[in-house]
Image (cartoon, rainbow, N blue to C red; front, side, top):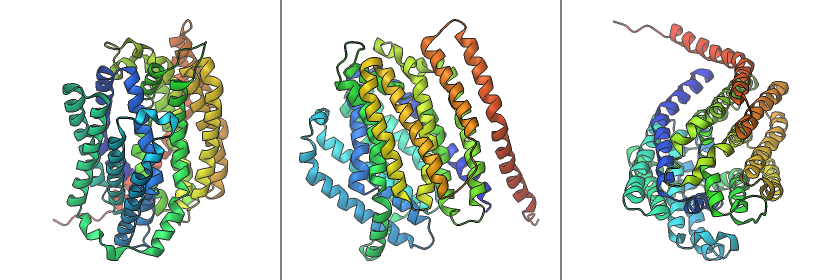
Length: 488
C-alpha cells in the first residue's frame, strides 16, 4: 500500500474511532466542574500528573519500545510482547517497594489518602497502554480505535456513578480510571488473543537489553514533559504573592484552562497515532525526506488554522465545557485559555519532531531537547507566576514549548532532512499571539481585529494544506483506478 494512502487510511480509522470518545471527554469536563470544587480539582490534576510521572520511570517506557520494535520486521512479535511485559511487571514491583520513600517528599502531601489508589492507577494504566500499543504494532488499528471508544465510554459511566451519583469526588475519579483501564486491558487481551504472544519461553535477554537501550533515554524525556505541567500547578498552588491570587483554587482554575487547548491535542493525537506508525515503517525508504516535508507542512497548517479558530471562539466554547453555575471561580477560565492553545500547538509540533528520534533510534536527543524546555519552564514559572499569576504559568508553558520547537527543528533535521519555512512559522506565531492578547485584554473592536487575524492565518496556510491534500487525493484515486475490476 502507498505510504500516503496508508497514512490517510490509518488516520481516518483513528479519527472515526476517537470521535465518540472525544465527545465523552468533553462531557466529563463539565461533569467534573459541576461536582468538584477548585481546590479538589487541583488535587485531582496533581494525582493524574503524579501517575504520569511514575509511569515511565517504573515501566521503563516499555509502551514506546513495544510499538517501535513490534513494527520492525527484524523482531518476532511474541518475543517483543513477552519481553516488554516482563520488564513492565519488574518495574511495577520496584514501584511498590520504593513508594514509602517517595511519599516522604514534602510537596507530595496531596497523595495522602490516595496512595493505594495511585499505585493501582499506575498498574492498570501501564498494562492497558502496553496491550493497546501492541495492537498497533500488529496492525490491528480498527480494534485499537474501537477500544479507545469503549474505554472512554466505561470511564464516563463509572464517573457518573461514583462522582455524580455517589458524590465520591477525587476518590471516585481515581476509581473510575482504574476500572476503565482494567476493563480495556482485559478486553484487548482476550478479544485479540494476546495469550498466544505470551510465555516465558519467548523472553529474549538480548532483545530486553536492546529495548532498554532504546527506551531508557525516553524515561527522562517523558518525565521532563510531565514536570513542565507539574511545576505549573505546584508553583500556583504553593507560591505566595502580594500582587496576584495564588493557592489551591487558582491551581484548580488553571487546570480547567488547560481543558480547552486539549481539543487541539485531541486532533493531534488522532493524527500522531497513524503518523508514528508510518514514520517507523518508512524509516528506510528513499524518499522519506520528501514524505516528512509534505506531511509536516500540512500538519503545521492544520494546527495553526484549528488553533486560530479555537482562540476566536474561546468565549463561546468555554461556558459549554466548564460550568460556573455552582463554582463562580470558573468564570475566568477563558482569559487563560488562548495562550495555552498556542502552547499546545507547539507541543504537538514538538511531538511530531520527536518521531524522527524514535524512527532513527536517537532517543537521547529527545531527552536533552525536552530537558532544555523543562528547565526553561521551571525558571520562567519562578519569575512570572508571582507577578502575573495563572497567566504567568500559561506564558511560561508556551515559551518552554516554543524553545523546544526551535531546538528540535534544527537538531532533528540532521537525521532526516526536510524543507521547513521558518518565515511562515514566525508570521503564523505572531498573528496567533496577537489574537491571544485581544482575547485577554478585550479592547474596543477586538472582535474585528480577531476576525482579521483569523482571515490572515487562513490565507497563509490554506495553500500549503491544499497542496498536500491534493497529493493524498491523487494517490488515493490513482490506487482506485489501478485496482483490478471485480469479476461478475
